[in-house]
Length: 201
Image 1 (cartoon, helix red, strand yellow):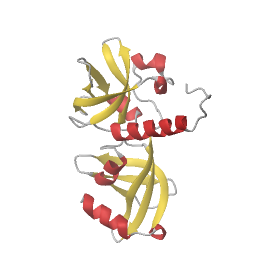
Image 2 (image 1 turned 30 degrees about the horizontal axis):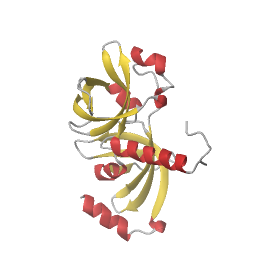
Image 3 (image 1 turned 90 degrees about the vertical axis):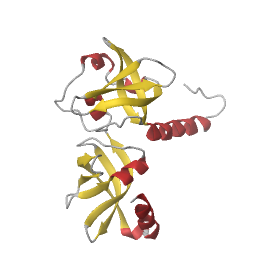
């Protein structure tokens, strides 16, 4: 199926495509697809798992903000490329007490490479292991949702921003590792453009 999307993309011209902003209606990583609702209205947009995977994520949270390149087909409107994903706006969901002191400062925490040990969406939590460290890192489903993700697969590579909670190390933010690497390269490029006498911090 991934090859079919690449072939489809190769035969498309810019005139065939349009950029759409909206939010995720739902996405099921097991079924391999979901739907996006455009801010401009109209029919739902099909989001296939391979298109999301090309962006570097295996899942996306319901209500996450998303920008897509889409094409109209005989079967409706389909996403052909994910351009940007932002976490859903915080509503009246669960507030984790351990996160309250650092809310708004999460981006200042170092991004640590990790691999998912297991995650059970029905239980609402799971664990990951940071490379080079023996202890497990607790991952709560609400943190996952805040990070714009919906689920994690065992063995999946992720980037974690970790805090010391009352019951041990826990994730304050989860990022797909491919996305984390892109952000890191972007930040590195920005620093590379600075003059030699400019501060890098």
